[in-house]
Length: 237
Image 1 (cartoon, rainbow, N blue to C red):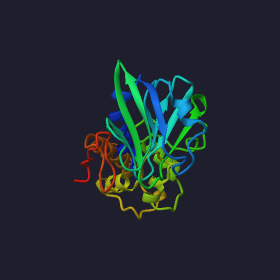
Image 2: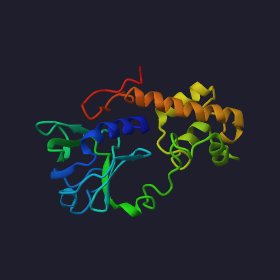
Image 3: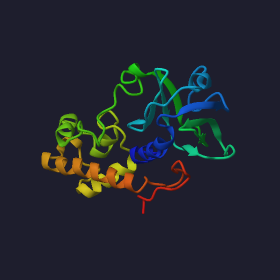
Image 4: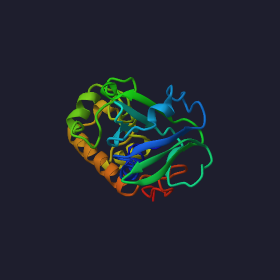
């Protein structure tokens, strides 16, 4: 499943094409992914302008001029692809982005269909069920050793599972939790509540370092992940 660095790589790849672009020729090729597409999905996208591109945990968020935010979760095999002349295999929706007179085709394919999309009133996003319980972003100001000490206090659950809990830290998955614990020299089996404050300081630093390194490398491609141009990530090397 794409983790924070892979989703951020996709966001950065889409940003030059989608930010400020008007969406046209939206097309939906099936009724559902993991969940049904939103009601009148194509109609609600068509003619809207993308105000900006954001990421929250493993979600992509595109606030629109219509007052709604288009939310996408890539699931395990979801993939946005730019400039495909014809629909690729397993393509479930597509649209054209018009920016500064330039038209770019954007397609979304998802072989296993574990991804999903939503349209949420922008002012209601933070309180939506997908987001309300998420912890702080590990690259943001809300993430620190002090935060880890607070959420891990008294926990017998091992530290790896505790870091994977999206209520504690948003966006971390198996690849980067394992790497950060290795760099911090903390056994993944250690009870979270037993990790000392100095070791949590090092862990918080290594979480940030691992994510920054992975984003620089374009994420990790172990099997399915590809960026919007079809290229692979190289962090796994």
